[in-house]
Amino acid sequence: MTKILKKIGVYIFHSNTIFIQLLVFTLVVSVVPIILISLLLFNKMSDLVVTTLDKSSSQLVLQYMNDINGSFFRYQDKLQQIANNTIIMDELLGKGDDSNPYIKGDKVSKEVNKSLRLEGYSEYRNCMIYSTVYDSKIYGNNVSMLEEAVKEVWYIDHPEYKGNIFSYLTANRKNKVLSLVQQINYIDTNSFKNSDLGFVKLDLYADKLFEPPKDKENGTYSYDIIVLDESSNLIYESEEQLVRELDEIPFHQLTSNQMTAHNNMLIYKDTVKRYGLDIIFLFDSHVLVDKQEELGRSIIPIILIVIGVIIITAYLFTRSFAFRVEKLVRKIKAVEEGDLTVTEEIGGNDEIALLDKQFNSMVKRLDKLIQKNYIQQLEKKEAELRNLQLQINPHFLYNTLETISAMAAIKGLFNICDLCEKLGEIFRYSLGKNYGEYVTIEQELKHTKNYIFIQEARFGNKFEVDYNVQSELMHAQILRFILQPIVENAIIHGLSNHTRKGKLSISIYQQDGDILIEIEDDGVGMSKERLQGLIEYINDQDKNIKRTTRSIGVKNVNQRIKLSCGNDYGIMIRSELNEGSCFTIRLPIVQ
Image 1 (tube, rainbow, N blue to C red):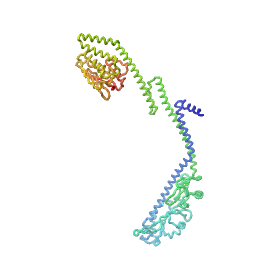
Image 2: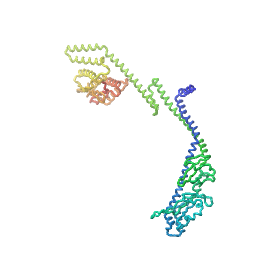
Image 3: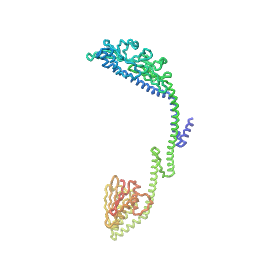
Image 4: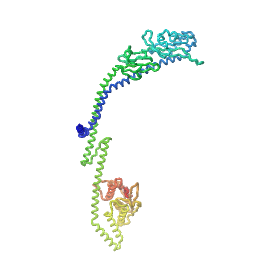
């Protein structure tokens, strides 16, 4: 089985084009995981919907609790204003202008109504102040003596009114009332004695205060509400008999701010901490099933679309990638067949583009190396041919020069002896029997001086030569035969046709780690056009360019230097017509 799978893998991933391999790989690593993830999504869909509904329900609960807490804060603030009203305190103590209990009660009622201003709130029922100052009777719409309260329903149910909240049924037993209570205390500023003047009681309709919001479409409640006091006594339920239907649920054991599932309901509990009220929220879990089905209907088309997009994107990407790779392979095959002119670039900034760029650079360097090697071999053959031509019977030439020198000595023509001696040294240096490709500056300079000695004998007092050479460079190595051709060019083309006595300067010095050799004359010079043409000629590697032989020596020297030392070295020329010329040779230091 393992061998079969291995063969299948080799066939798929190594026997097809890179396009097929990439496409299969991309689809395997993208589509298959998406399918598996989709299956997991379907399995986890219920948890996802529960979490979503939990957050939604928590938001509804939070909004509801904010409203309820805001309402309680508002009513408690009203109670505080009434309890701290100095006019009301004075009237309760009998410190007012009038002692009539009904006139005092009317004043207090007006103050109560001014502090309340709750006409627009449907849950507001009534607000009463009950005085315990029995020696100062007071009666009114919103004030009375506590002894009168014993006849009222709330006092019968809650004779212990000292708490800050309690609930009761109205006389007709139809409406549940929630009462908020605030003690009225008076502190004598002289004796700092605290006196209990009574309390203020604010009555609110529980069904109006705690009623949950209704759905705008069908007019039903969005969720149900149960309100219990600290003793788990029922204060409000949004649907009748709701608590009896859920009597098996221990509401007091529910964890606050946490969703609990029960049958077809989701239950959430929160608390109004100031008054110890537990508010139970009941959400219908049928919404959960509907959401699950809705999510299933919406997620499947999305998954199919995503898979389709991935397949199309994978095809386009792998096709583009494979095309670039195939293009690079074609270039490699072309170079393998000997075509080094492949220069078409593959665009982009990725690794393939970088690989293509490096490959093109390698091909160009390879082409240059081949051309350079070919030129060097050709020039080497030409040099060997010239050497063969120069070596034709050298002993015959030496013997002839010695014969001429001896005959001149007999005649007393010692200047001819000197010329023969210098010419013989030039022959020996040119044949290179005792020299290599590189010689010292001292040797190259001696050869050049021998040449200048012969030229001075030829031209007479036509020019003079000035040497300026740094002594520490005399043993530095330079290419052989690079100085004499430049000096010859300066004498023949710069000084020989000059009407006055000319001057030739040869300077050798070190600059920026290189050797600079300057051959400067004050001869006829060159025009700008001729100078530009000469510079282009000596730097052109095309052997087929036809040119007069007057500058071929300069070009050969320049090309030899560049081939041996690199393109950073060679000959630089500057010249002014009728002012002279200067040839500067730049060479590396070779010890």
